[in-house]
Length: 137
Image (cartoon, rainbow, N blue to C red; front, side, top):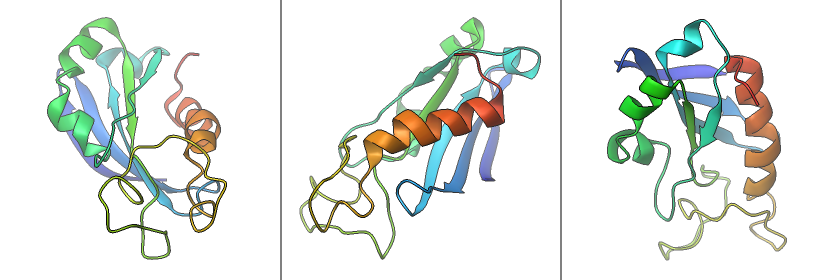
């Protein structure tokens, strides 16, 4: 796993991480806000799922929740909305393919090879976050 951004924010840190996902078969990115309390204790996590045409940056720049999260010891994780890359199926329409925010497991070609977002969020990302950042359940 690779940290690609780190910014001090309300006494905590706003970070962006990239890792290879076994579930989607692609590199995936997610943002995480770590409140100051995360340095010394396990903190609860809120998973923010952005919608159509967004990515992990949407939460960072538009939500404005970091101050509240810092005050209340809340970790906030915001994953990208879909797998991305040249090998990933896409569509010319903005509401289907890369960037579309459907957090489901695709069952039809050409989508099913990489669009396994339900399993990614529920299983892989949750396990990765709790293991790497030591969050509470």
